[in-house]
Length: 464
Image 1 (cartoon, one colour):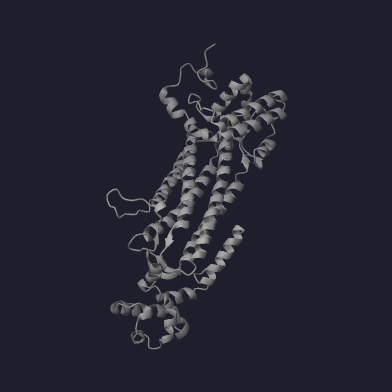
Image 2 (cartoon, rainbow, N blue to C red; image 1 turned 90 degrees about the vertical axis):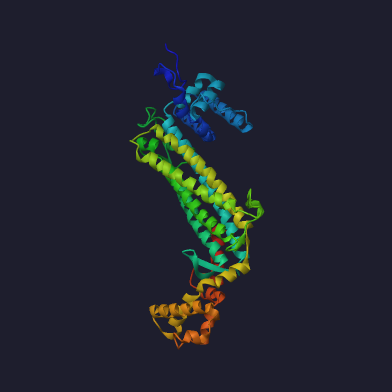
């Protein structure tokens, strides 16, 4: 009888794995993060084996007790992951074998590492998506607080990075509340959608141990039902793609916020100041104060995108069933979660601590003829012109203002009347940034009353 090369699968092999195969094949260096999910799965699965009368009550109790001891060892830091056991499943089974001997081998009755790892990863993702939701809510609360403290701050709103129309800073920051609300909704829906349990699918075809109640097994693991098809159950990684897409979209929203803050903290804008605690200096320029925290969030977003593309590229070329390529999903998932967790924490602190330069924002809102649309709207309302006519008239007035180096609210009435004689001094009630903001009373607009209503609705959504 030949000696087993690998304690789990090596009986039919004559040669040891090469060092290179071990290096590329072993996943314990990252899938150790699934350890508590794997212990929980084995504990619940062994109970199903007992209920199916595949193992005795005494065997089940012995397995259960040993798994609890392994979990306690982990919590105390008394567990060493062994690289010679290629993955987390082997590590747990071999640790169990050290405690209860060959009985440990019974926990693999009727299951494969294929359905086991799919279930472990789903359990891990279910836990982490809830943590993401919690952190999103924390940022939303910070946004509401920032908006309430800056209700009177007027700033230029931008299109094409050019001054467009005046808005309230509170309106601006609340726009990110809405982006995060969509991110949160996607995450919550995704969690509800993670309701099918792959365990019991075996390697691909199901299991001969049909006495195992897959419905009960799924519910005991926190799922609502088992997967309908065993082949799909072991190879499905749609949930990984969805998880990474949700994280990617979330990071994209926060990266856009950071891009604004980076630009606005520059001396050319001076709209806001980063705290020293979230800034760094230069090794050569003593005066520098760099918004590195925001810049790194912007960069980590690209890193998260690459993980999403990575798994999509892996999956698009796979045949049906399990392939070892699927091992590549875990590093992408773990790294992306680690990145988004850090991004969320830093963003929360950044929004809370940046100092708003109210005077500079107001001054900038006068630039770029940002109330030109208000002038055109006044002409439509008061002079009964079509908007296209009003747009043409306003464009000519802006040219005159440029030539005279005046803002619209400071331009002489006679110069406006040289373009449109019917314009009256009443127009000046519409040409300051404050007047412009006050007029935007449409639902979802930037008027103070609308922003206050938006904050009220936001608080109701968060139940605060």
